[in-house]
Image: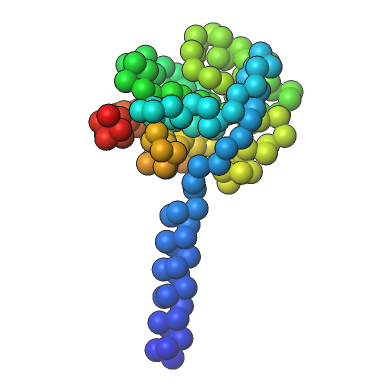
Length: 164
């Protein structure tokens, strides 16, 4: 019985440590709302910190986070922060998503995952979901659900200070 219990604990520990490493950099190419293609890896110049955020127009916490990220983008862009968002709306909601971006004057790159391929690649099951990668494409921060913008800003400051 004790051996069985130890075996179960070991399996759980291995599974937990694997799931912690599961979310790694995956490259992809998507169009923005104007039809311009972007390759995700092209944003990783020397010293750049890249935030990847998944959202949809029907998700209120997503919309709130996107608006709050505006100030962070303006504040840290010159220090190397790049924000890339991936909209996972259906084609029917694409106009609503475009309108939201325009009305809120969001300046960062907003891509559209037409077929849900990138959503699947990153294992997105709930949104908002945010990833921050350093200039070496190493995942440095990840969260699901709305977080206080100060927590996100502190992570960005820390990662930027370590990449300079």
